[in-house]
Image (cartoon, rainbow, N blue to C red; front, side, top):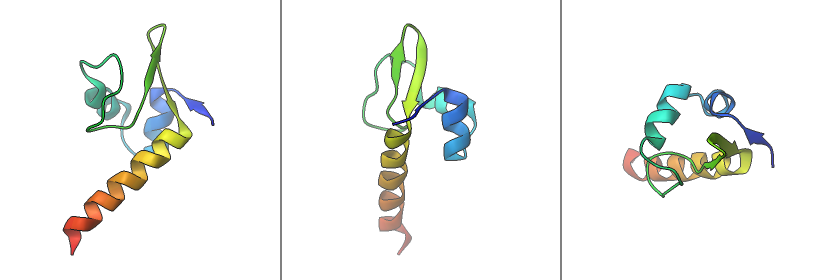
Length: 68
C-alpha cells in the first residue's frame, strides 16, 4: 500500500497533476464521482496505489459498457 503525492499519482495514472487537482476541487474529503480516492492529512493530499488501481478498474469497466 504505497502512498503517493498528487504528482506521483498523476504520473501513475497518466494524467497531469492539474487534472487531479481539478477533480478534487472544493472537496476536503473524497466523495464518489469524478476522480480517484484521496485523503488530506494536515493539508497534504495523499493517494494510495490500491485506490488508484481500484479507480482505474472502475473507470475502464464503465467506459467498456459504452464502447460496444
